[in-house]
Amino acid sequence: MSKPEIDNSFLAELTFEPLTKNNWGKLVELFGVKGGCASCWCMHFRLNKSDYEEGKVNDGNKNAMKELVWDNKPTGLLAFYEDIPIAWCAFSPREDFIRLQKSRVHKPIDDEEVWSVPCTFVAKDFRKHGVSVALLQGLIEYAKEQGIKILEAYPTIPTQEKLPDAFAWIGLYKSFERAGFEIVDTTSKHRPMVRYYID
Image (cartoon, rainbow, N blue to C red; front, top):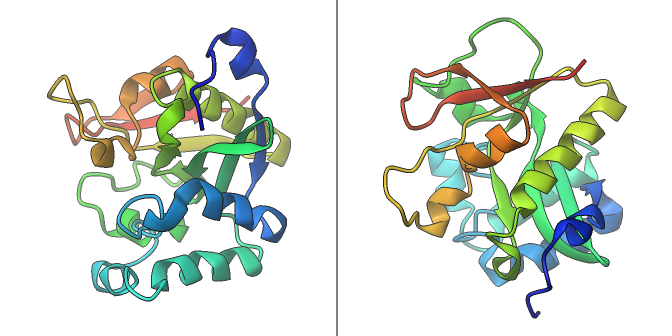
């Protein structure tokens, strides 16, 4: 896949779909043999540590994600460019993410019903071109259509200029800021809690 000429018109052509049985193959295409990152299949936040590590072999995490999709559970949003899947973000009610429930620094700050966005993934050839911001903007529009009122995320503020890709998958704060998210908690200095309140 060659890098396209990325400009505003390119980003405007992106389309977005929630992950379903019908487009499951597109997630498989996007994540590739590595399952996104080290056979994660976006299950890191959904499983406790031992189950997650066990799921890295024999397609355990892949099958766990597939089971959620086949059960019609909300899992995330795919971004497409000309029918090519180029980006993804996990997106579900906060209580669906076990790791968040157990987090010491990202505890709920109130009793509001929120949908969490704990990780994002952009295909290698499409990184550093504004796709993450466009993905989040697409997510906001989709959430509006679904009647969702609060989006919450836990992105990183890098402490070094060059951030390894594996750490970028929780999302970069600057991308969320550009999409209109605001910091609502700084218990973790470099992993603030951010929210987008939908009117």
